[in-house]
Figure 1 (tube, rainbow, N blue to C red):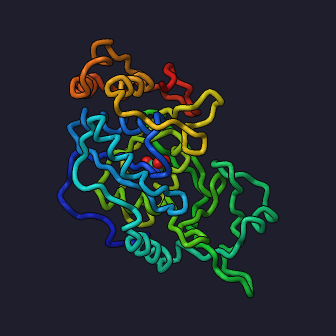
Figure 2 (cartoon, rainbow, N blue to C red; figure 1 turned 90 degrees about the vertical axis):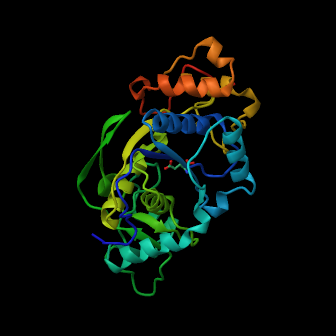
Length: 315
Ligand code: GLU
């Protein structure tokens, strides 16, 4: 394990959650559900709630989207603690973490192109891509140059106790493979940035969409290798459109219209298994939040692992 300087040593804190949107477009109903779930869980536990803009994948980031997301959250009455952290300004920290892992021999250079990996294996990883066959694990072949850096993973089962989904088991070597920390295009991977930032911000409770459940064991392994604490996890059902696709910029999800106020917040709350009284749905946003914080109960959230069409269709 690496004993990095990334871990905070400040006094113990209470619940600290966060919402970490990628600015690939405006806030849509799917990301609103993650914002509402993480916010209510934090506030109902007397905790803090941070917002972080995850623009580490710069090619996918859309100029102006971060400001738009923040304005929508603000208009809907979300109140975040502290400054909004922006990943693209924190590349030094991701570099430091990668160097720690390189020096410890945990991270290794990889020369494989996508087509070379495809020629070497047909095994699929949990996220649908190809399971890296470990070609460069013992060193680069003669004449090959490093394109990316990967993290070694162990051949053993991890158990994740998720607050909504229950127990999830995953063997990283068999189901994921050594995964990328620094991509061939020079971008730090989400897995590395998210782990570094959650620790740097003392986030100890993560509430987000179930589409990230499969990434969590990778993040737990990185936390262990970097000597960082593991937060608690709660993975929420994910909203899909009429075609069964997860709402996203790629599936052309509509932007949340903040002028809908309590009614759009109520739809998100309802999606998370909390029926909303009519007067609250039609009342002021401040009343919605007061009611929602006291009504919140994580046990009510449907614990579906797959994508959940939900009892409510986004307006
Ligand atoms: N940035 C990710 C997204 O927008 C969320 C990451 C996380 O919550 O860990 O899908």
